[in-house]
Each structure stands twice: as C-alpha cells, then as structure tokens.
Image (cartoon, rainbow, N blue to C red; front, top):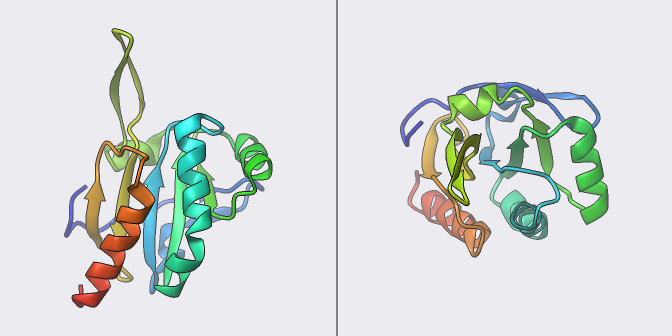
Length: 157
C-alpha cells in the first residue's frame, strides 16, 4: 500500500468484541498504525504517546487506530494497565496486517520468523492513503505523524 492507493477496508473487534470498520471513519483523517505486541516496551511507549497526543489529533479531525494480532482480551488488559485512550483492534489471523504489508519476515538474534512490521498509514477523509511510514522507529514517531498531518492539511492535501 502506497500514497494514492485506496485504503483497504476492514472490520475488526475492539477490546469488548465490538466491530469497527474503516469505512465508519469516512469524513475523518485516520492514523492507522500496526504494532507487534501489547505490553512490550516499544509498543507501550507508542500507544501511550498516541494517547497523550490524542487531543491534538482530534482537533485536526483525526482518529487514531492501532492494530495488532493480540486478542481483544489482551487489548483490554493493555488499555487498563496503561490508561490508554485510543482505539485498539485485534487482527488475530493477521489478514489485515498482510493486506497493508505490515506482516512479513523479521530477524532477531539470527533467527528468522514472520511477525508484525511496525508501520503507520495516514488516510484522508475520502479513504485514500496520503503517507506511509514503513518500519517505524518509536522514538519521535508520534510527533512526526502529527507534523505530517498538520502539513498535509495546511497544503490542502
């Protein structure tokens, strides 16, 4: 998936099992981010930073959606433990992760395996991808996403 592409629609459950579909957010900017695992250091930092900046995104008519292959139950614990206030959805079969190119071969300590590739997509109110951050490094990422959103809106996307 690249800028200019129509964002792949999906319907996935939140921590309560309630389905949320991408098309439900038409008319809003969507920051769609994929992350490897609840309660790991980088993923916790990223989710907490998105939560802390949520008001700034909302002022720009943007919603933040995080997706991982963790279960709704895992998301519930993650949200409660860290006081998160963003929408987290479960893609346990990694079907949507794959469609967005956020599932692939990874390497750790010389061992290869398949897993989630941390990445973020900025989707415009019409459902088109405006910007992609592949292979995200957590440090400074949330600020970069906010800055890009402000820039795109300012330039009339």
